[in-house]
Length: 179
Image (cartoon, rainbow, N blue to C red):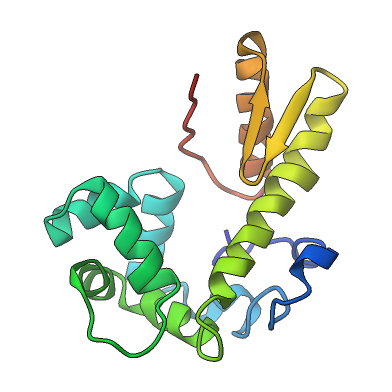
């Protein structure tokens, strides 16, 4: 979403819980890194991530199971601390998405946790501040970070709320529904 031209121009709201984030939103680069989006690897990354199949691509490229890829993506790509040599997931990510990897390194150049905080802010904005308010008048729900909990009978309406917001942002989405 942050790489898209439809990223909200004012970014997610600034709440006191984000007081330790060192950068403003959108991040330190040209507006949401749009200058880099013509890169084919960035477009591929956006399609895979919004389609819910990014892990599968990295699993194939790194030759690892899903849990290893999820952990490696978090530790060695999104929030890499220090300058240790690339591990399997980071190498696969950098080889497949070199432009996105450079963006991540640039955003995290002062603090390895910057991108994670920005992503958490975006998740909260999306779920708590944007999707949930549309649903509250229709049904009882509860939010937790990047999730909405509802009654089983309301799941389709919750899905529709997410799809509506993603559509407004110019995305189709992969959605994980759990019991």
